[in-house]
Amino acid sequence: MKRDMMRSNLFPLLFAFAFLFSPVFSASDLILAKVDRRIDLTSQIVRIATSLKVENTGSDVVSEILLSFPENHAKHLAYLKAIVSEGKGKAKTSSGVGLPVKAVQPNDVPPALTIYSVSLPKGLGKEHSLTLDVLAVFTHILQPFPEKINQGDVQLLLFQESAHYLSPYAVKAQSLTLKLPDARIESYSKLENAKLQGSELKYGPYENIPPFSYLPIVIHYENNLPFAVAKELVREIEISHWGNVQITEHYDIIHAGAQSKGEFSRLDYQTRPYLRGASAFRRLVAKLPPRAHSVYYRDEIGNISTSSLWGDSKKTELEIEPRYPMFGGWKTTFTIGYGLPLQDFLFGLDGKRFLNISFGAPIYELVIDTLFVKVVLPEGSKDISVSAPFPVKEWQETKISHLDIVGRPVVVLEKNNVVPEHNEHFQVYYKFNSLSMLREPFMLISGFFFLFIACIVYSHADISISKSSASYLAKLQWDEVQATTQLIHGIISRCLTAHDKLEASLHDLSRTGDVQACKATRKSVDSSLKELSKELKQPLTFLQSCPQATQILPKVEELVTKERELQEKLVVKHTTVVDGYEKKSSGREIENRIASYQQKITALKREVDDLMDFIDEI
Ligand SMILES: *[C@@H]1O[C@H](CO)[C@@H](O)[C@H](O)[C@H]1NC(C)=O
Ligand SMILES: *[C@@H]1O[C@H](CO)[C@@H](O)[C@H](O)[C@H]1NC(C)=O
Image: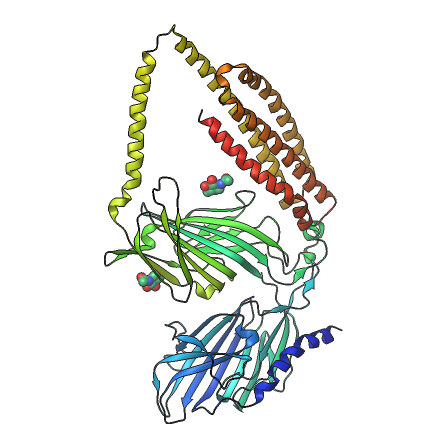
């Protein structure tokens, strides 16, 4: 049964390649004397490192080498780098500047192939040879099979390749090694020359293979590493010339491995370790620059303090632990933020300044479907230009925050299909007049100055009021209104603290599964909210009866109403979640049930906060 399914799955692919065997590509002077391929299948990102010994057997100088990929691989290609290998034998270095690579479409190549052309730094003459090291990185190319698994199942993947190196050139000698995770190998194509040694699968050597030869192989194996994919990541890098680079990263993450089917059972998850969901992930680790400070991690509910941070002089590592374990198909969104010392990333050159910082995300082995990097420059920056090591979409925006007059220029870079290999440095150059740096302090200083003058005028005016006059009495009454308003502010703020306790009890519930503790918290919060509501009555009645309060009364009443509404919603949400836990509903089901409240709660929280700020200023 299983075997049949697998076969039907692969048939279209095999057909697609059937016609590739015809030698349509015009005879080339180049041949590949030796090809060694190593494919790393140990994570969700597939890396194919190929070493090609290229020989020119013709009489013309050759200046480009073609690389070909079957279309089903090419569409998942995230990164391609080719370098001329210096040094001989094993002591080769794989770092170095990549050669220019571009997609081309020679007429005589079959359409199911994608061809890249690598430009050589200098032409390859007659009977000369060179060694080219090519690294190709692919995402979303491993196919979970089965696609849906139960909570306790391991995750199995399918990978399809050709045992022969697919190339427009004839290949004299070649071999292929696949590095698999240290786990079960369900099956692999048992060709004549196949050999499995531990977790390494070898095909070849093969000799004298004609151009465009394709010999399909399939490997079906276990891999339980986190398939963390950011559907979208927005990295904001804000430069402040006062000494800080602030980084804020908004992640929208999905577990893109085999989908989890059936209900999630926390009981199973906690009590039976073997059912822990072998492919679920509980944490992600981000490698931040060495002198990162003020690190935080929060999700839509609030700061998460259970995450931990450690580091040395080379790096700072942040462990990100979502509120629930992530099973296949599950999603989470969160934000991490940190500050970096300006002098580590901002430099000067020819009267310009430039930011030099890494492009990709700090999380290990993360695939990013769409990455936006936004660099927020200081207000007044001019002549902005970007230098990136690979093509990116680029445009400019403006960000206005307080104390800004015209807003800060923002350079936005967009790139799809980003892998850790894209964590290279990029630069943003700009001109900046240091005088404009003084604008913000100047505004602050002049602001304080005016406030100071106003205070002097006010206190003088105050003294001049006669203590028996009507205006003096009015002032006394106004003071009382103010004091009462502050009293109400204080009571509401205690209500908000109680709300937080309620929400925190839900976080704890999701961590510990302790329903009783959660209910106990609910009980104590309920009673303190009742007390607070009683306390509120008297000051509110006073304000309603006081003619001087007519201006502010509507806002105060609105605050009281909104707080009560918020309280009701939070209580309903609490009841729903606790019920869900008692009935052992899945995490996702509970999420769905509270989704509509959650929106309303967020909106109400904002309204209440705004009203609190307004009233605080009276
Ligand atoms: C979260 O923590 C950061 C850094 O400690 C802090 O600046 C921020 O105000 C906190 N946010 C909340 C909602 O507590
Ligand atoms: C940017 O920083 C990296 C790493 O420190 C360094 O290798 C590179 O040369 C720098 N680039 C420029 C243009 O300064």
